[in-house]
Length: 302
Ligand code: RIB
Image 1 (cartoon, rainbow, N blue to C red):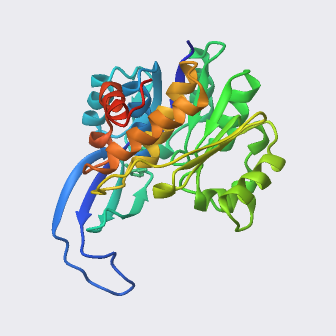
Image 2 (image 1 turned 180 degrees about the vertical axis):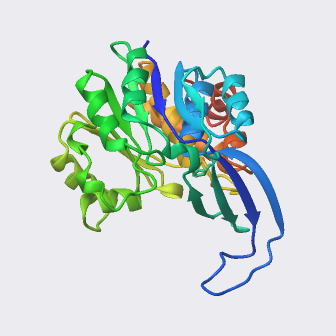
């Protein structure tokens, strides 16, 4: 089984419980503030590792980010290419409403300190069959996609947060897109039903598999051979932060383990629904045993 080489962000998430999202010009009292480990990259590495995949995390933290490294190591993520820089660790200010919805402000910090040479060196750790996973919270993402593809590696891309210049990225080299609805619409350059967006993206990127997560409406999947959908598992939303990352990590791990796509969708959907029911991003990500137990309670044995 290959491994996941995740060039991923690591953030310190400052989470504020608010009655509603703060509006322009408004001063709003928060009810509570908590610090959590986060970052789309870290969350996805943790999810994939907790799902049983071998994960090498390539990342950058500042002097204040030691606890993020420790957390990855607790879940058996390989952190030998997680380097400390002088820049502060990336951080976020996250508002969470009573409905569990979030609004996130992110400062890139050390996540923006990659050099091309370091990326090339990190890719020397790759073996045939490995996947490179990347989100959009680090610098040099287009160059990384190009480099990984030129080494014959498969590339999974979660273009979050969406960049203004996405169309300049070498997206035809991506093997797996992991998208939410807003990202799919931006990528397609049009609005439309989820099916219509997938049709459009399939024509534009015929070599890629596409995962389109739709929150409480479930998920759609399409590749050259099949189109699948999976309903979301109902849950009491406490904090949706990191649910998409949990889905991405679990889905990619299942794919590396050679599980059928339908099983990967079930595992990832259940893992995301568990994550939503708990506060914080990284701490909310379940381990595989818990996901399997929850699926079995629903009558699904995997
Ligand atoms: O996807 C959730 C993550 O986005 C949070 O953990 C936060 O760090 C932001 O990067």
